[in-house]
Structure formats: C-alpha cells, structure tokens
Amino acid sequence: MTRTFHPKPELQIRLVSGYDVVLGPGKADLLDAIASTGSITAAASQLGISYKKAWQLMGTMNSLFPQPLVATETGGNQRGGATLTPFGQQVLTLFRQLEQLIDPALAEEAQALLDLLPPPEYLP
Image (cartoon, rainbow, N blue to C red; front, side):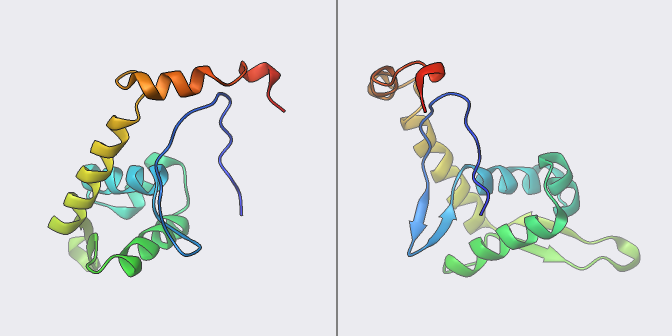
C-alpha cells in the first residue's frame, strides 16, 4: 500500500472500521470532485488518480456506509454521470466540519500540538 508523503507535519482526520479507511481526506476530495464535475472520470482526472482507483475508493465508501454516497448512471449516447446522494452530501459535510475543528489556523490546540514537533528538516 502506498502512503501519502507529507513534507511537513499536519493533522488529518480519518474514519476507520476494522482495517478499512472508510473516509479520509483523499476520499473526501474524491466526493468533492464528483460533486463538482458530475463525473467519475473527470473527478479522477482532476485529482490525478486513475479511473480504476476512483472506482475502488468509491466502492469502499459505498460498501462500508449503510447507504451509497455516490449514485451513478450509465452513459450510452446520453453520457452518464455521477452525483452525491443526499446521504453522501451529509457525510461529506460532516467530515469537512470535523476537519475545521482540527485546522491549525482555526484551533489553537491543533497548532500547539504541531509546534511540539521538531522542524521538518530534523524529522527522521
């Protein structure tokens, strides 16, 4: 599994269940991109990930929540699309609100915790 490299320390929120990351920053970004583009292909392209990876991430989310977060329509001549379900929009909104609670620019406790780490150049 490839992990995301962070050149400087940061706080992130992840919702996990068992070994699965149900929702994290990358999946939330995918939901945002699907909402703004109306397309899994366009969302994947916007995020610089493969179409297959976008489907895998979306499949994980849709299978681990009790309701789908994304609804899709097959294309054909009319070109299909993808939209967030109302439940998906609710999940994304709650996740983004939680992210704000740990944003160092908005939460002094978050910045204080980050300040306890040495500068990035001294980290192993």
